[in-house]
Amino acid sequence: MITAPITESNPTVITADNALSVKEKLIKHFPKEPLYYVYMDHEQCFFEILVNDIPAFRYFQDGGIMSPVILNNYIAKSGKQKITYRLYPQTSRENGEGFETLTPYTRFNLTLYSRDNADTLTSFDKRMKILEQPNLKKDDGKTFIGAGLPFYEYTLEFDANVPYEQSPSLETAVDLKSMDKELLEKKTVEAYRYLGKLISDKNKDQYFSLVFNSDMRQLQSEYYTSEHLKENGNDDLFYFNTPSFKIEPLADYAMKIYGNGKLVCLEHTSMDTRLQGRSSIWGKYNAEEGGVRVRFLRILLYLPKGKDTFEIW
Image (cartoon, rainbow, N blue to C red; front, side, top):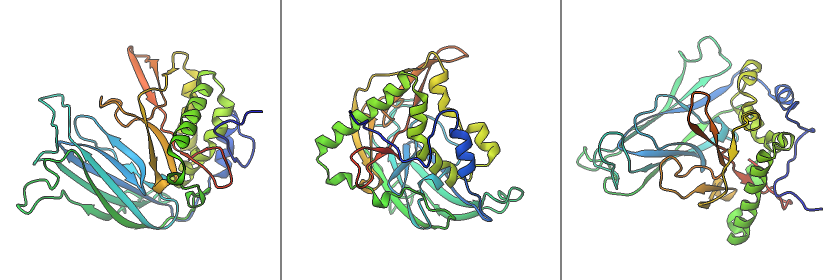
């Protein structure tokens, strides 16, 4: 019998039909539920945010972004946390030519807040500013510190206090950097093709079983309520209930290691900003309003110690 390249270690048998109810039973709530999130203000750059060396958000579009990015999914437990932002030249713009390097007028500000999710009445009014990272400039006080560079990275730290500890922990996962690179890439490609085939074959029970622990980590760390869970908890059914959704062939990818050596994924190598750095598992579908749309599945894999098969983080 051939072992699947991705397996699971769920607390019970998970199917597409029972996944939501099991999640609802397992999510714990606490007297205080700190939620950490950041706002970004940027100009003349694309960017991505990593938390503890795990990709949390990317923005390769024209214009600004108003919504916050919640960080809890990437905070495994209380203690010191790292936020890294990576800035890239805005190579394409709706109005005017793009830039080959970061410009003297590139701007990036980041503000980190915390609020108590358990306080449903005054949570936003009582939010706390944890830190503010202003735009970094050269000694002249005007020019962006990374002007002329094709890439700029900066890391800052903060202390988080959360009432949970994520399980399973990446601390006990295999250090993928110690593995043979060709073997690791071969195993990663097999895993991605396996997951893509599950979707193409409409094998939703196996799919929901494999992503269950990953889903639970996010739902618990963001303190999902029953109402929120029912509204958003089964989004992945889209891949199975949308007849026109088709997985694209796995191509033009590069293997990337994150999570301080514990996580691996495949990303697009295309410089097309619609694909750049996106997950190599993606598909197209016919939108109800007309035209063709795309969806990307951000999948990160890890190897639990003592296992030879990946699990989805």
